[in-house]
Figure 1 (tube, helix red, strand yellow):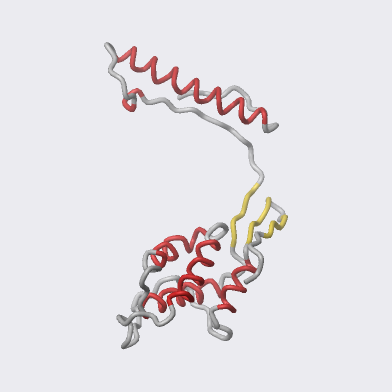
Figure 2 (spheres, rainbow, N blue to C red):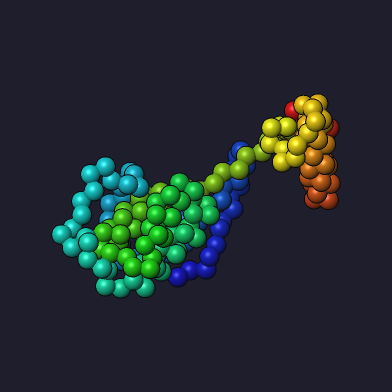
Length: 176
């Protein structure tokens, strides 16, 4: 297996985080050298083989591939649900579970270049306060609003100081 890597590529609008080399390595490790990519991660009409309910003969391979796919979800959140569903069966996979994992791999085969795109934008922080979420009792609604506002202001002050230490300056932060 290749080194766990995330490539960062500059684009015209920002940066693209991709794990395409790692995804190709998973695909090759699974032995799916020449298959046609599929357009979706799940099948509307799943074709289960006759032995779909039998235990998979080598759970170590299943665990290895699913674990690698789980790491791939860092830059590919589009496959997270399907991979997390596959993770639920790592202790005792059946042949049908392997079929679902192969479907994920075949989908990834057609989308090697996908990743996360980060674009340049302004950095604005807004605070929100809701007195209904306070865990304390108040004598009046004004007191509850004041407590919620004070709590939100303290949290925003902490976040603002943290961002200032990171070199990010913020204008005045509104609390709504």
